[in-house]
Image 1 (cartoon, rainbow, N blue to C red):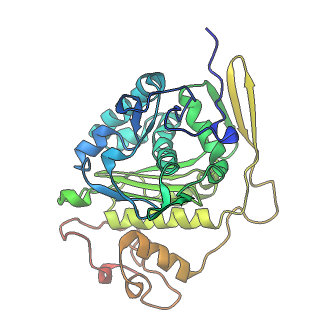
Image 2 (cartoon, rainbow, N blue to C red):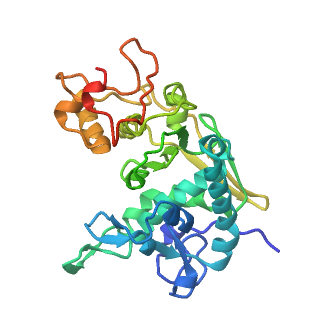
Image 3 (tube, helix red, strand yellow):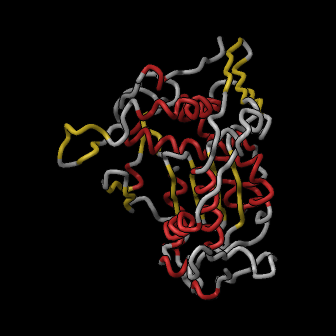
Length: 340
């Protein structure tokens, strides 16, 4: 039996409710040929099955309705065993999730990020004007071709060769304190344009930048400082704001070489540091970070930047030491407890 080959859905604009999103096989347009973007175990665990998620055009769909076409092989063989492993490790705690094979964990988070985009391919940009086009167009999807190829590493043997990282992404797992209020235990955010994702699952926090490993190379010392410590959700939110901001000021277009052989696919990323004399990451203004903190935390401008040009931080004390924030005061700490 021959090895499976890469499916170039995005190059060919091959998007359909009757085409498997992962391999391109024909499927029936029914729930038996559907993959949940957010896995069913996650939806049940956090009580999200019937709760709505608001998409880019304002459409509110129940989480259970966020499904994409998927053939039986990809669903039950390629994705199912990864899904089961993540579920088992999630139950065991953040340390177990962090110790998972990073390539497999990458497939799991990337399926959520890419799956939401794929679902929006079939929804109107303006619900009142069906002829206005879809939220995400086939042309829009072209910028995510590499991500779709990476996602296929669960069905096609793939070897990653990257100087900055072991996987073509910056992926970090954190231990997060779990709120007593069940409604506050799950949070998802993404930035489609800058390919970043934030996911808080009870006691597990996952940050991902699909940047070919750039923030792993340039940001490991920053994010690793907070791994292994029980973070307050506000602290994890601040880390998410930092990841999203760094993605915004990323000064490179990674150069990728992809080769197929009878043994599989070789996915190589050239060194980012050597492509240009400019820094890999630019800088940002305090006002821009303030807006990002407001997005993540829901605080006012005065709370995230009480002094002009200086952002509040919940990660460290004034002496620079890591800060522990108890969950005793719910739902969140008051901003006045933070440090400038």
